[in-house]
Length: 237
Image (cartoon, rainbow, N blue to C red; front, side):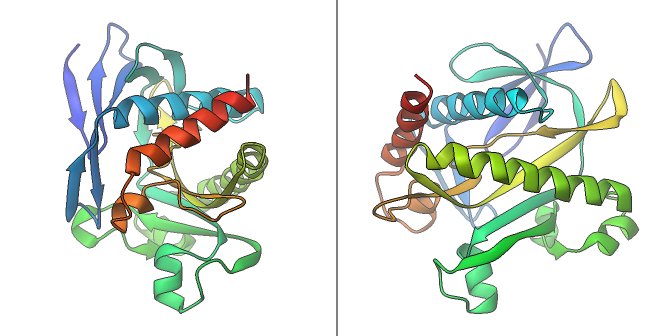
């Protein structure tokens, strides 16, 4: 295998199949667009296990992902995609940047989910954009933007119920999508779904069980991630 990409939380390697990549989950953690950095033992292992469990569940619900197969404690084999340079953010409850930008109190529940696009460009600070921006930037056609929004809302419905059964409230999350290299007309869910990419609160206590424990210096970061995995595994036992 040859390394072809290293991001903040994952590495990608080639395989014998030109349409298949090996994705390795790292122990590194970043926040504030990379301004805050740390490494946590077993973080990659936990995020990989959580993502695998969630992607297998989504596939069973008819949501196409890039997942092919499990490999080991920190690696998955995935279909090679051309990543669409948009983060699709779904918000059910006010938190994080939404509250900072709008002044809406954290914990305020929305009447309907909010879907946002963020343009994936570290140099620009991943700015929020709309469908028209996406079209003019060549990030996604209008039809693709509609598809991304609809898929994100479908995933949201499934995940809300999935996490509720594990005693977790899905506050918000971000998704990435890609066009299959083997079939560019097909867009599938890519990257990961984990406490790195979701805000998850304990349904009874409101305790933060996600990356906000790192962002906000709350401590016990991996304990939160471990608890999320344990609850999801027990729910599916």
